[in-house]
Every structure is written in structure tokens, then in C-alpha cells.
Length: 230
Image (cartoon, rainbow, N blue to C red; front, side, top):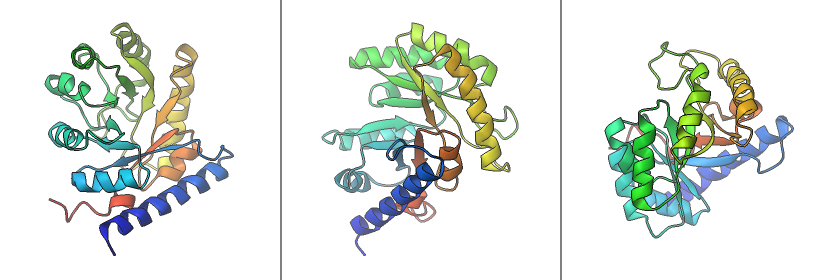
């Protein structure tokens, strides 16, 4: 099987899962967007995915993401930066990313705004919320800090689109995402237009969609195991 066929099969299976989850949750067909996570995979895979209809690509390491974005600059893609972001790399990320999904502290905001301004582009951001602060080492703002973080980002000229989260290790995803839905409900009271909810990956996209995710971030279910990729 060619690499294109492998990717096409992974995409088809994932899109079928998303459609089934939308139906099970009583949501409209096509209401959940797919971000394909290409971390550790080559730009040649990104080109094949684009040819297969993928428009949103996720990366979580700046150096790799920057190189791929440059190599694929001729493609009509939106690059999502989804990994933990170092403050000193934020401006550089803002020069190529269309969406930064991992804004979890105020220190990132002026750097992101500066990088976007230097590149002459608008930048959409999601606020990454921790579903279990301090318990598993994953990044994310405390739910109580989201309103202030959103205000700071908006004042800096960033386009706050909504929230992103990762289910904590060791916890049932449906429980974690139910908590996320409650956090989002509170957040939307003050930011009704920031309705994007990025949650769910290869193993738990169904539970995320059931809880209201508008975007899922899927890598291995489409591209295969990363263990064999250097």
C-alpha cells in the first residue's frame, strides 16, 4: 500500500468516527473540525494530506513546525501550534501559525502579539485550560484564570476563539470532558463569541465530541505510530 493510500485510509476511518460521534451526540453533520497532528512526520506527508482534503495541521514543536510551514508555504493550510510554548519562542511561532492553541499564561501574550504584528497578520488563539492543575504535569491555565487571560489577549489584539484542553492521564475521558464542558459554559458567559472547544485525540475523540468539542486533534489514528519515526 502506498503512503497516500495509508493516509487516505486513516483519514476515512477517522472521519467515519467523527461522523458517528456527531450523530450519537445529536449534533449536525460536519459540526466538528479535524486538525491532523503531523508531529514527527515529514512534510511529504503534509503534502499528501493536503491533497486528500486536509486544511488544518497541528504541530507542537516550534523548530519542526517552522520548517514544515516554510516547506509547505505554497499549500492552503492553517497551522495550529498545539504544544507547550516557551516564552522566548512565542513571537517566532506567531509568524507562521494561524492558530495557537496553547496560550496558558499571560507572559506569552505580548510576544505572540508582537510576532503577529511583525508578520502583518492576525493571530487566533485558544486558551489552554488544565483539567487537573498540578496533578499530571500538563500545561494549562487554572479555570479561574481564564477570564483574565482572555481579557489580556483581547487587549493585545489577539483573536480569542475559545478553549483547548487535554484529558488528564489516568482519568476517564468522559469525566474529564464533562468537567471541561462546565468550564466552557462559565467562560462563554463572558465571552459568548469564543465558542471553539478543541479537545479529543485519537483515543478519546468520541467522548470529546459528546461533551461539545468543535475541533479534535488526531495524529496516530491517521498517520500511524510515531515510535518508528525519527
